[in-house]
Image 1 (spheres, rainbow, N blue to C red):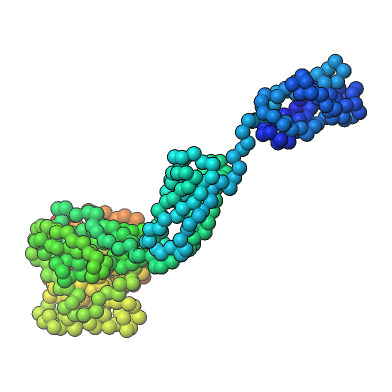
Image 2 (cartoon, rainbow, N blue to C red):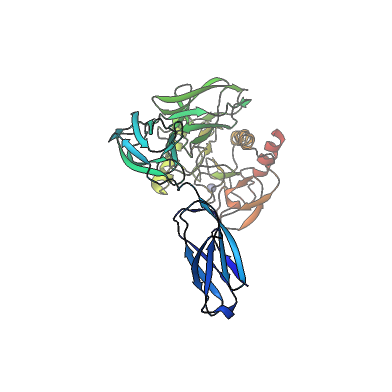
Length: 457
Ligand SMILES: [Zn+2]
């Protein structure tokens, strides 16, 4: 029994060779099969192999559904081969004719070409670097043309693509400088219900700025609030305001690129709180390259210096701040004063390190460092210091969302592993030190401060 196992599955072209293979009974091994085309033309076919297999290479001179009969003795089979009437369109019918060289960045130029054998109105595709579509030119009288332009210098592979595999390529060189896309900063939020002494988050976009580019966020065209860095075309910064009223907030990328919003800051600051800005004792800013801080708690300290009298002048207190700074920076080798706030015997509070930056005060440094000026191993803080500590800690708890400064929570320490500590704790609770005085913080009235703060929250 003769069987065909291989024959063309799709139309073949005139004069295109193809293979037909199959099997026959091994009894016919060594004998010729007979091939008959369209029941008319007969030819000697292939010889049957010892295992009964056979194969033959064949071609047709004319188109149509051609019948091919394979036979030996009385055994035969038939296949129909479709022979296509028109030849496959030959490739290389598309050509580039005029391609300006070089092309300037931003310049529009006309590229023309030939499309032999294409009908009028046939659409071609012109693309660059095998992916960017530039135009879909229409064939007119065997020609095509398109206007193209490029935004970047370099070399481009242009391709004109027609039917099937019909395409042509040319490489063009683009010269000149790429016009810079203009950078643009903006705000994406306008914070609402902003209150004094409450942290506000500003967000925005910074188009065409590179990652790490530094912007300036400022208020009322003079006070710098933050220097956010661009990440993936966005920026974010936090700031707080000490006074109520309308504020003009600006994000600044450069002289030419800035955006503004107006903010309505509500409410008055806590009346019994006197906080003196850093500028009262130094004209140096906290170094901008220090790690940012998202405070998780408040750690209380003492400065371990002989306390100034309650009646000290502000000049004496300013000198005290400078002494602390000097011992931290030139003595300890730190980048800045370690504490975020210092509370003098008078009750006046001085801003130390910027609250936005990690301090250097309890080794873990995941919170705000607040120091009482003085040594409280036996002495007790002044009542003014107590009042100020309560007011300051209340404000800080409100600002950072610490709702319960009393209940102990698991807290990482430098020397004692994880301990259960309240959100307002003493330096010695986390590090082996005598600061800020007695165990349990009685000399700095720590338990009373926590309770008083909790009552105000
Ligand atoms: Zn300390």
